[in-house]
Length: 247
View 1 (cartoon, rainbow, N blue to C red):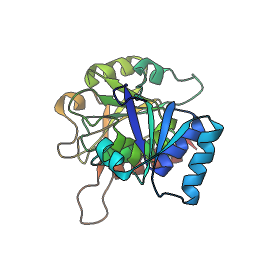
View 2 (tube, one colour):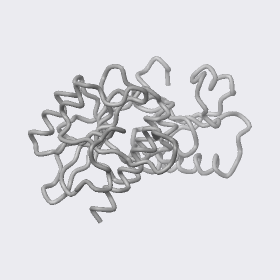
View 3 (tube, rainbow, N blue to C red):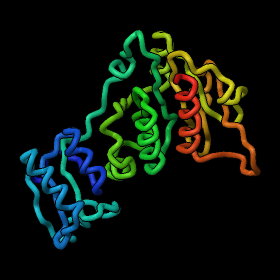
């Protein structure tokens, strides 16, 4: 396959394995570094053979050329370019279910985005919303950091986050911002409703324009001397409380 095709790269054993098992995104071929012969590699080859996907043995230099700054473990899947979902699809929740969407207000660190994708998938969120500009996108590094969790989570990429929140509010969603200045501890808020949880930028938090869209802001109450949490950790704490209440 020519590398001029519109392809993305999924690096690392867990991400490649999950893509093979779940059949998305569609894998075009798999590269394995010369000299790799562990049980995990043999599992990848077996799964690929079952799916009739070509496996190519490549010199390590090919991986460096393809992904110069990515930890790939000597395994990479070449796949169709990552396909974002439509926002309307994320908002189309059955009426007997309580919806849970996560919106990211310009998260720029790929490690944070990958970790948030994995956290959202773990807690069963219905989808993730990211803005088109000034935001980390779903790259090879993000797919690797998510450890394959992206196959379980629809992700929408929107031109204007504020307008998207307005649209969701009209559909009956509560827009709940997470910030250190939130008036309500996340453990005291009633999460038994359709929710869009908005997480802010790593340094600046929620932007003023997005903050105006929020119906309420919640915080993770601190017990120690550290004033704030990493945004992906805060996401895990709040999502854990949401699921606890809903169960």
